[in-house]
Length: 463
Ligand SMILES: [Zn+2]
View 1 (cartoon, helix red, strand yellow):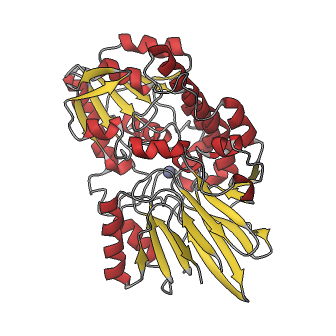
View 2 (tube, rainbow, N blue to C red; view 1 turned 120 degrees about the vertical axis):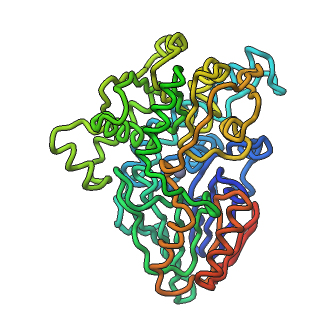
């Protein structure tokens, strides 16, 4: 009988990994890195609870590291099978997996230099070479094309509207003459976003694995542009620098798109904007290359000859030296840098320099997972540890949830309302415990469907 095992994204938004077993195949849906709390990060070092050689295929719903970033480790452990992903996810992984490897290598080097690793010498979780090997295994599949993974298993990707290339993994499993549909939402995006297409409408499935990042929250009514104009103008009045930690992929492009609109409408001044992430530069190029994957509004604008992601005074920062030179800027500028949850990357040195000054503003535009520096700063911690030093937090802290790439609970329920029959079971994943429980209650009271919140390593039969 087909089975599913939950190897991550249980009680947390990170480490998405789900093993699906049929009579003829074992596939891993998503292969993500755990981030945030230390007890979760340590799981990245644990071997999977079965031999890697027994996995026939890996399927990625999208390129975010908490869904793709364990892949190089899987390859280091001997995985050589295919990795199925959409075309844009494949393109994005070409920059994201080597970048993730680079961060792992830098962390290990830094720990060795400062001598604060318990392991001597500290080793990276994986290397650039592992990441490059992983990239050679990718098999890009267009949206809507059904491929056979085994005689009893097919896969179709459907647009999830979360980031460029994001998809639902739509599986059909046959066993004893029955076919069952098993749908993974991956990260579920939001309708009516400026750049991405809306999530694909689904009319039903036998089993659903759905995310719950915002399972008890609404994004609020404040218009996104109004909110951003308010934060930018207030931050310039405060006189300092506005620092925005942002995922290099997706959020940064939406942010540039919105700032450009605000400038054109003269709702904010034309400020120098520094995008300090080599990955954001490549990601922006991939965005412009994969035009078929985003929606009409942006297409029309590019056809009119406008560069939709280019603000009036925009600087893409490439080298480490250019990045460090930004430390000298103390007023009237916006710095956008990764990682979005302040867990690593160049944002760390910007936070190091900008957090202690009350003239500066820090703006969060994405979800901050439990245990990350971003979450601590957002929740009002008096200080935060960066590179082994305690940094006082005096800067003004702001957050706008309207840029979120995740559906809130009303948007999730609206997406589910097009289902014309009850799933046999709805597995609720990718949320902290309160979020998952809250979504389960809402699904039960709105639709009377059976829901399950799986625990780490739990297994269910799909009969
Ligand atoms: Zn995501």
